[in-house]
Length: 160
Image 1 (cartoon, rainbow, N blue to C red):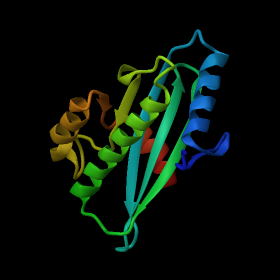
Image 2 (image 1 turned 60 degrees about the horizontal axis):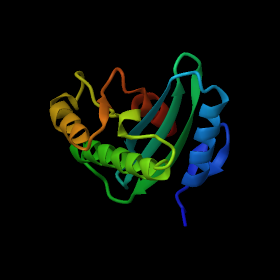
Image 3 (image 1 turned 180 degrees about the vertical axis):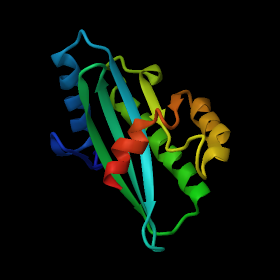
């Protein structure tokens, strides 16, 4: 049974099965539009006593907005930046695989999902770009970095 809890500002608290249903309903309302499924994770250290991770699933109806769902994972142990970034990417990839498994009979594939990572050419994460992008691409997903990684740097960030 699916115990994973997602939150949605539109629909409240949901399981992954509920998220699947809401996504399919959202896409069915205006099937003539193009849709983009985005998954991104952001993290925040918690005063030396752990780390807060938020993974967001964004369903973007190109040109007219979208809906999103998010879940929180709290790590008890503090992590250095490099380890946090790897963990963010791993949480996004895991969520993407779970989402694809839920949508396996709905025609949604890896080609329909983008992974947004909270790294870019400026700041402390710039030397990690090739590694993280390679990790995500090697898993078969399209990857976006800052400033195009709104799933991680805007949506998930809103809840960390």
